[in-house]
Image (cartoon, rainbow, N blue to C red; front, side, top):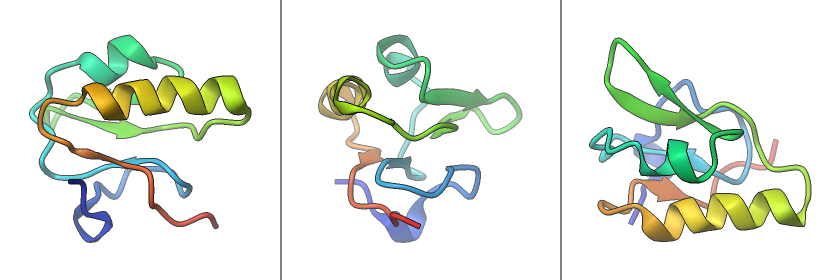
Length: 79
């Protein structure tokens, strides 16, 4: 389960985030490329845009549910 205390600093503020458990498998970036991107130097994903509607949320939830190491969280800060 993702831990917001360990989330990458590049994550934009909001519900979804990626924490330090990320293994750079690319699944979230393939599933929801509008919201997840890669830190090229560090070799991990992070949330670069938060969802704006229900369809967006569904794409992010699909990425969260598919993450093999549970590095995506949906309990982030809303501000």
